[in-house]
Length: 373
Image (cartoon, rainbow, N blue to C red; front, side):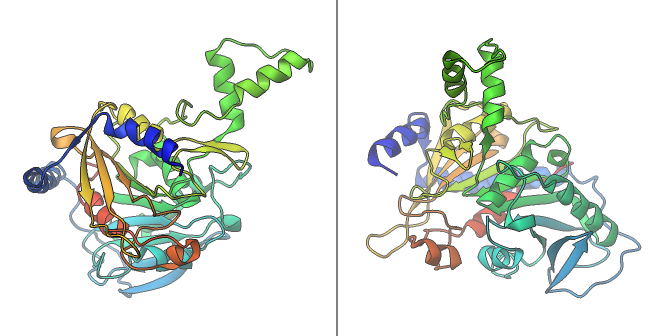
């Protein structure tokens, strides 16, 4: 990212961001604990047991089919067929697989997770719905997976979460905007998400909002109008989204050195990528929060040279809603990689710096705060 562009984009956050001091960070931690207790109390009416579920082998990954579609399923060591367990859906990136995602997010490791079922779906042709020209029904596939889990395992239907990398992160954004699945999934955590907006959608909205009618024919003026209407404006574009509920928790991770899904957005794959600050603020506004106001705090410790990158967390919302929408800027030298304090397949492939934190740990803490009731 150029220094000029980075300055412009960061100003979208920094101009309205209030830094958090050390004392306030401690207070924030206490507030998180209190909010978790409140969420647990609010959701006390949820089912606390299951009946008629068959015991399964724990602490292992197995392959499963729904028609011709496949996914991998991790059952944690603490799983019981009579005690509802949380669930995480984790979607791989473009050209990658469920196996690659499993090795990347390490959500099967007790270091990050010992009580949550994790599902790793495989995309058709290693890609996902939401990418321009991709026509697969991956939201339907996701719903079918959840239906199967509810039928065959003891799951906590109030604590289902979704994460994903790149195009998988883009699908997570699609799920959050879906009128049905947004009511089945409690919180969302895209990483380096490819939040494509198809040019056809850009044209339709521009035609409507500007009251312009493109008549039949192919005049020079019409072609110029069409070109203008379909331009990619990453910081201004409308993002179609019709979730089935308000107050959707979402945490988004993005590195400043990402050259595949740029922080500043732009044209890509016959679509348009929104600038990340614009996308995040859109969620703040959608959730009824003040999109012009957020609180920032540091995450991790960065050092020079070959060391890790310091990150900045931007939290929208106040009181019990603080952090309902959260953006994690992973660092200036973190690119299109799953943030980790240790080298992983992504950072080796992309030549990125190590992050100053583990995205998997941060999202697990975030997921733990939220539940459907």
